Image (tube, rainbow, N blue to C red; front, side):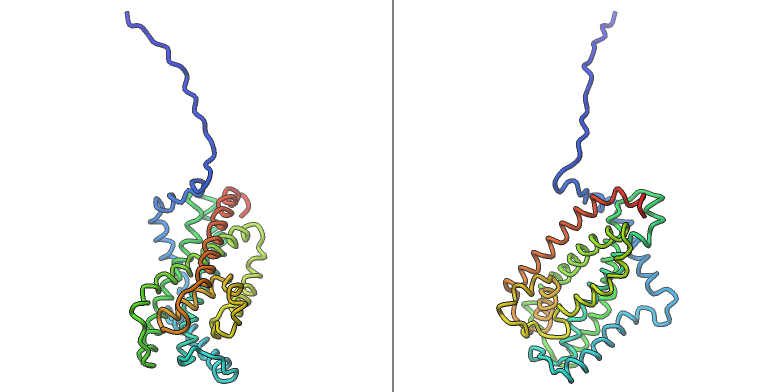
Length: 281
């Protein structure tokens, strides 16, 4: 006769994750194919039924450069760190264009994809992330124009500094994603973000050294000025490609720290609000 042993009941404790584990960033890798699909979809939608298509990625910064050259280069005679003003402003418009494109699309990514959010499960972080990364296509197209301008103006970059170009591009993405996580989560509940966003980007442009050199800011205000992470990005991008301005210093470190802080706090806030997106949107 077989003896039946009695087992003690097993108790399973389910506790909420804490710390960085609560962000569940590993889900992004599991849904990486969805990220790639969303990037490709955003790119196609952006230029769908447009006459000039991807040419707008070049037309917009070029036209802005011409306006800046006339107003700030010819009329106001703003300093351009010893390089021709057209290429000086265009080099600043490249990372700035990547930032604004990513910020505008990512901030509206949740509300514009409300059908997906309410009908199926996937990490909601996929939507703003794909919107931010989709802006890299326009950036690469405009970067080709900048290289052509460097050849025309006979400007040779410092080959020892080119390693920093991807770093500052990555810093631009971090800044855009961090701000977009805050705004996209807020936009689900308060649609005022759509009205405030043009003002935010316009004001941000004025406090970023795109149309002017950061050297016009006095030394005593440089650290405070570098609280704007895009200030460090634009300065560093010009230094890496055009060999103009100062090499990365404490101000770039401050800008980088602020960008990382915005990203981490944005991730935490986005994850805390994520559980309410489907009901609120």
